[in-house]
Each structure stands twice: as C-alpha cells, then as structure tokens.
Image (cartoon, rainbow, N blue to C red; front, side, top):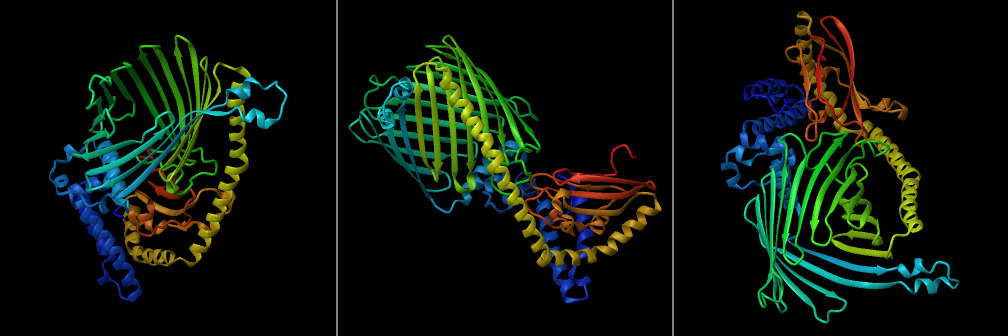
Length: 559
C-alpha cells in the first residue's frame, strides 16, 4: 500500500504516509463519488501506517503478511525483545504459522482413523505359468496382518489437548486402549505423554524443542506395570540448520533399547522458480501460475549413514516437490551388506480438500513391495502389498516402468489439458469481471486523483534529466492467449511512485503490486508482467518485469 521495502526507516514510512494522505484526504475532494473512493484509500493508508509504526506488528507483517495481523497475539509475545522471537524466517515461519492454522480451526474435537493391511500377493507371481481360471490365482491373495486404529482428540485450550485411542489387530484378542495428553509450554517447547490402559501399562513420553535453527526431540518408553517385562527404550533426535542464510540441515538420531541404532543424515533443499519460504508448499491450492505446472518447485537431496545391529548401510535420496501440481517424486537407495535396495515414490496432495495419495515401490534382494497410502479427512489407509519375497527382474520392470509411463500419459493427456481449459476459463471470467468490475471503476477514479502528483513528479524529473515514465502496462504475459484486452495502463500510478529519480516496487510472497494505488489484478490465476518504457538521462529504455520480481528503475548500469 505504501510501496516501501522491509528496510525502510521510520522517517521514510512517515514521509510516504504524509504524501499519500494528502493526495487521498477526503476533504480535498469535491464530488461525492471521488470522496467515497478517497476515503477508502485513505483508511487503508492510515491502517498501513499504524502497522508499520508499531515495531512488533511491523515484524509480524514482514514475516506473515495480513494473516499475522488477524491473529490475537498473547501479551507475552509483545513484551519479548524482537531478537528473542527471531531467527524470524524460521521461528515465525514455522512455529507461529502453525498457531495461525490452529486458530482458524472451527472445531475443538477432531478424529483420526487408520487402517493398516499387509497383503501377501507372492503366490500370484510365483505361479504365473500355471493354467487355471483367474479367480483361482486371485484367491491365493491373503492378509499377513491388519490393524485398525481410531483416535479422538479434544483441545481443552490453546495449549492442552487430550486424546483417546483404540486399536484392534489380528492375533490379539483384546482392545488396545490408549490415552494421551499434549501440552504446548511455549511456541518452542511441547510435551506429549501416552499410556496404554491394559497390562503392563506401557508408556511413552515425548518432548520436543524448536528454536528455528535447532530441533530436539527426546522420547522415552517403558512399562509401569512390569518394568522388566518390556525393555525400556530412549531415542534422541537432533536436527540443525547448518547455515544462517541457506537451507541445508544435518540430523542425528540415536536410539537405545532392544534394537539400538544410530542415524546420520544431511539434507539439502534447493528451490527453483520462487523465493523459498516456509509456507509456500500449498499442495496445489490456490491459483495455478503456469500451464505445465512444472515451473516452481523444490528439489532436495539427502545422504546419510544408518548403523544398525543387523546391517549398517549407506542411504541416499533425491526428489522434487512440484508445488503447483501438489506432487512429489522421489528416488532413493540403500547400500548394505546384503546388497542394494531401491526406492521409488510418488505422491499427490490437495490440502484444500484434505486429500492425499502416494505409492512407494521398494526393490531389493529381500523382495518387491508396493505400498499404497490414501488419506481423506484424517482417515488413512495403508496398504503394503508384498509381490515377491526375492528379487524378480521382470516384475521389478513392471512395477516401475508401467506406473511411470502411466503417470506421464496422465500428465500429458489429462493434467495439461485440464490446466489449459481452466486457464482459458479464468481468462474468460477475468474479461467479464473486468468489464463489470467496481474495482476497475474505482481504479480509474484513483488514477484521476494521482494525476496531479504524477504531473509534478514528471516536471521535477524532466528538469534534472531523471526518471520519466513514458508508457507502462500491467497484464498477462502470454500474448498467444490473446489477453491484450486484460492489460491495464499504469503510466500515471507508476510516475506517482517515482522518488529521487528511482522507482522501487517490492514483490514476493506477501507483497504484490495489486495493493498499490491505481493497480488491481486484471486476471487472477494467470502470470502477469509489468512493461515499462521510460526516459533516464534523456535516453529511452524498455523493460519487462514478471509479477514475482521486484521492480527497480533505472536498471543497473545506467547510472
């Protein structure tokens, strides 16, 4: 709204507020329509100034945007020094965003169900050459194990949650009942205690601490009724961000108990097509920004060592999160004493509808296993299917190549056409909205209010051979989609933003041009660009700037 970057001083904030408040003050307008439009803009400018004048709210807005301003912040947060609430990018980005999501929940009671079935399908593929009806082959499929669990949680207050759970499984003739208590001592520290109500009253206690740079999780398990019957166990997991301005992490996980093990892991995520932030992965929610859906994402790699009593091994993984599609593709391997095991995984999620599906194929000397997982509204199905108890080359090709080819065909012949259709529908809707939009009429009125300010800036810049905006437009960047009628002329609003022969417009996750005076989004869900033709030192220049990039004029090298 004020078009200031995060590093703006309080004097710059005050100066910008004073300039805009004079332009949009209702008392300076003469007709009722202009006065109403000026009043709305004046109130927005005033609210923005109040936020940026409060050090705490300014820090919150820098990290969380408008969502952070709607949150009812505890008084203890305000009283803490700001440096105590930072490392801001992660402390606010991870911990507080979780609190914001919880605050949006409309219910204090939640339930979760999980059905886990291990299917033995090895008989089908061991007897492929046998003659006989298909149903006879299928009848050989059976369950190795199965279990059903259901949990109900009741949130007592913002910090404490109680839960009850029940599980049934094959081979056990009684109901396994559990109770849990979870308490959030602070945004960084939380604890959970779990108790099995049946003998020998097994218990588990977990405490986690997160400060943005480090994550520490300590777990302890035992049996209250018979301490010697169940071997006590303890595990400690520590994850640390290695560099202040990079995303690499290292972790160590030590487990002491019946099956001791030590795990060391190094993870390196690399974003592309966007500025990486903690909350960008929305799993396909919101507006699609490209036709292919492949232009923004995060590639990641992970390497490590797992020391187990039975078999130490080296592990590695590589994958990519396709943020626009809400999909994740991953490949991994583990090298141990018995050979190499391969892992191929694909998952898709849509958080807006609480849907998630994934498939994982494991290949190795111990056999071939396909794991299917499905989740909807907190109800989960886990279905591991054992296809072979030993390595089978033709079967391995079928379980990897065929699904991969099917996935590519689905992408090209279903996903891409649907995205193209949706995009054209969005453009048609945007055209209709633009013709009938009250926003467009209000934007034109705001432009009239800015004319005098833009004229003064132009005269001042011409007198010193500074920055003069000759022509500027804002709209969809794809010319082949015939979107010229969705382009806005923003010459006057941009000239009004020029100060001291410079133009700067911040962009990013929480900052777009749509909040500036004289702008609005002419085509939601479509990538847009800002095209500017300008004079600087009496030389003409032209630049096209995508919507996700900041605008800085004149360009470097023209000084």
